[in-house]
Length: 439
Image (cartoon, rainbow, N blue to C red; front, side, top):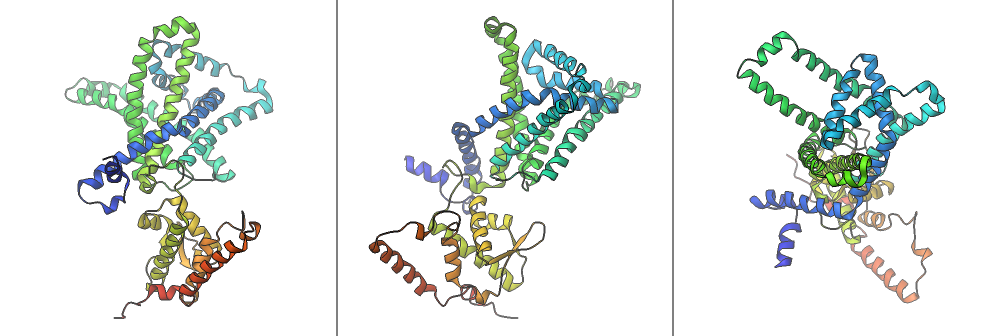
């Protein structure tokens, strides 16, 4: 029974299922994989790291935003946003907000000096970088953006983002206080509709923030549909967590009795942790939505066996070679991932081996496409298999560094000879035969 249930959930690809099974298995897999990721501990560990970085950068971040907003004359809007964010802390949220605002107003940059100012800016930038590193981990992206892209991107978010957000809020508040707007608000059913919109707009605002983060934070291309899916789920989770945490804070009078005035700080830490964990969960949902081939039960990065690497290499050369021969649109990485259903990291390893082996070339397009490096009649199948079988040996262990007894060497030599005899005269052109009849 257990093996039957396991096979029904985890075997096969989504596009190979028919009827309701294709739509039911995918969310079930995603739920189980998200539970596994939480139990595995990486998401919770990175959320904890973001809490620590936030504590270091919170005041400098608010001070930077406050300075920019003050220059544009909308600094008075920062207090309502803080109150909204801290509302789940209960009655003490107003005290925390006033303390932060007072601390920011008393912050004298001139006293800090150039080194102190540089440290403040560094703590703010480190938070942005920490967010990118965490989201890149979820998206299996090994490298950050270049320094120039990070510098320009972070400054844009830190300087332009608050101005746009608070300007929109300020303009909206100004419009709503006009006599014409007040007259409309007291007219039914416009007043009821406006009240309902006023209750739902904060939800859409939170979702928009999550969607923006999922769309642009990872150092890779994220489809809008994936970012929107992750943003909607994260926004709903944030609203639910806000309500639940507010109830928890309201009923946790025993914490105040035990920790006294320190209790509000503990609640603030827990609330920060929940916010970052929700953001990372939403990023995971966006990733699995765009890359369903990663919805596997095993932990960590899915790896290909030796046999599968050879199979994938031949399939890649077959697809790329046949399209090149027939004059079709070249294959991009995203199309190959979707066509083969292989995890993107594993597929990238095989493509990199074929490229380094001189069998494939990448175009300069955006996104780049793959083409055969030379005439398909001169690409031997033996060379394709050799490249993928020996990939990585130049950086790690190679056969000469691991001597073996003569009996083992003889067996391995016979295996290589048998493979060589089977594909010795075959090329990529032979793999693509027969050629389509000309019209």
